Image (cartoon, rainbow, N blue to C red; front, top):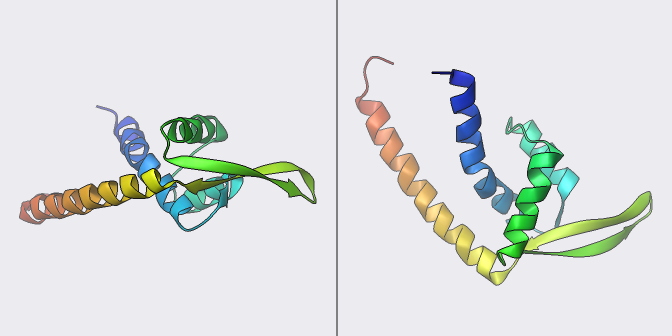
Length: 112
């Protein structure tokens, strides 16, 4: 089994959750999301982020608006919809349960 592949799959599994949390703080530009994800060692490329943002928007969890930029073309800023806020709340409850369950199992492990 390849450790690196498993690590990538784990990151992909929580990427959507992390993106929704970033956007929940307020209107956010995609490159700012990329910077934050990268600095948190959630290695993501534009080719991963933009399709995910489109899927979340098409699911009704996000909306966006175009804002003129002084240094180039207009920028698309994302924010959560009301449905997205409820969805994130549900994911957070699930995350908290998973962390608790995982830590319960890890604490019983003595060989690692």
